[in-house]
Image 1: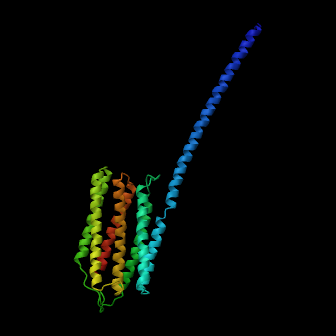
Image 2: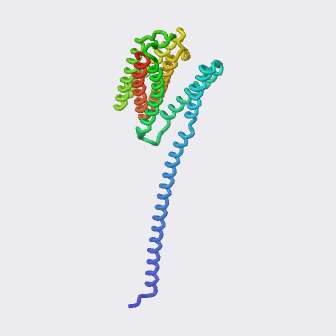
Length: 301
């Protein structure tokens, strides 16, 4: 059966229209898929760029370099100029430059950690453990020097050596109680933060800061009286060990207080990293434990 010519033309027209519609839909689908894929690529690049910006921010922070140069000027340079070469003015200049560098670097570094957005939600405790191990090794070096000095003294010799005033044995006990209390108050503060009680967290954190500052005030009080009696780091071997151990521990207390203040300011302004709160707590408890060894060895042995 033959179809009329006009019927054949209509069939071809309908088929062409259907083919055109299918091609149009296919093109639209391809365009939508390409657009969706492009959006995914742009979003991935944006996230990657943000991550790179975050890493760039930490890599180019000047805080670690400032702390390193400050510690270099404070400890070996100023100490050697004063007590080895007897150059008082250069020692004062080195300490005057090193102290602001250390304080500025610590403040900047803690501020960045407390206020900057971090792309990492959970930080592995391995880094904190490695840091604590490094600190333990430094303290062990100081204790080893003191033990070598102490055990090398004969039974007939007088210890502490001549020129050492009578140390107040009540003050280190009070300072020990203050540090233990500060560890307890900070532990309570962490528990309050875990329950999202920010007001209570600030209260207990403030109490911890006050106790830590009191400990440093006791150290300053003791140093002042010892200096007035002429007991200086260069007086004898015991004085060098005494000021090295207590002073190095006091510097750690100062760093812990700086981290507490940074956490307090971050909480007041509505932005604080809980990881920093936990790390500061671990560090503070470590400083507390070290003080037991410092006090027992220096004051009571």
